[in-house]
Structure formats: C-alpha cells, structure tokens
Image 1: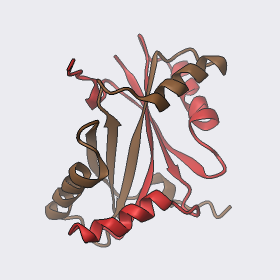
Image 2: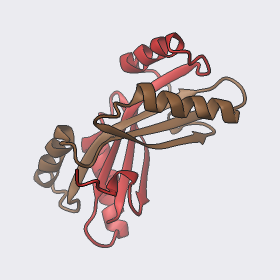
Image 3: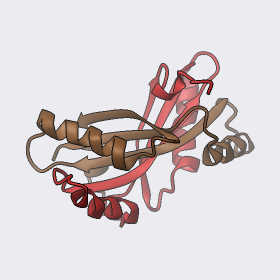
Length: 92
Length: 92
C-alpha cells in the first residue's frame, strides 16, 4: 500500500537535547566521525488506494498543522513512497 | 556540510502508541485520507569534510547499535544527503 513519509526536524536555532545527548555519547562508543547530531521525527501515513494530488496536499496540511509544531519544528520533507521498509510484516 | 540521514521506525508487530494517537486525532481534524499512521525517528548526522565509505559504514553501525533499539525498532534508511532542508536557516 502506498505510504506518504513526513519528516519533521527541530528548527536549526532550537536546542535539541536528545540530539545533544547522542552527540555526547557517540565518541564514548568510538564514533568520532560526526560533528553534530540532531533528532527529529518520521511519520508514515498509509493510504488505501491511489494517492492523488489532493491526498498529497492533505498530507502536507496535516504535516504543517498536526504532525509538527511550527514554533520549534520544520517539515523538511513530504514524499510518496510505494512501500515502506517496515511494511514487509513479520507476523511474529 | 554533508549530512547522513538515519531513519528508524517501530517494527510492524510492535504497538506504536504515538502513531495510534495521531491516527485517532486525524479524522477529528478532517483528515480522513489515511488508514494508518506510524511514528518513528529521523536522525541527521553532520560530517565535517568528505563522506567516505568508512564513514557511511560507521553511520550504519551507529544506527544499528545506538540510534535504534533492535528489539522494537528497524533502521529503515541510512543515506547521504548534501545538505538537510533544515539547513537554510530562517533566522526568525
């Protein structure tokens, strides 16, 4: 089933305590290759049936109005993917 | 500066209370186009200088060992982007 991915990141000027914590922990685990880490959110919206331009527009509206807080976050990406990697269900 | 994006999602068989909450709220706000919502994480790792295969491998290792919990989460994507969308600072 088609999935619309929405990516939300904290604005650059906003402090990101989770990212900072990871930033501090990485060198202790031997990862010295990265100068900065920021943590945001990824949403996967499943659509039953065909994804029309209207549905994509609705996803963009939902991303701006509900999935992100415009005071502290930016919607950096809204894109259609056919099937998310997490979709091949394991039925465990 | 180059950025490596790491996407982590809850495994399909794992309950996702945040996604469920959004799923319940969307129709109340008029968004009836989506049958399911799942919420995961997006990390942006900044690299100073060139991104070699070794650095990408380190990012994959960090994604598996530190940025995700393999019991409940899948790393669905590790990819190099030149500059993240959040980088064109708004200076609001």
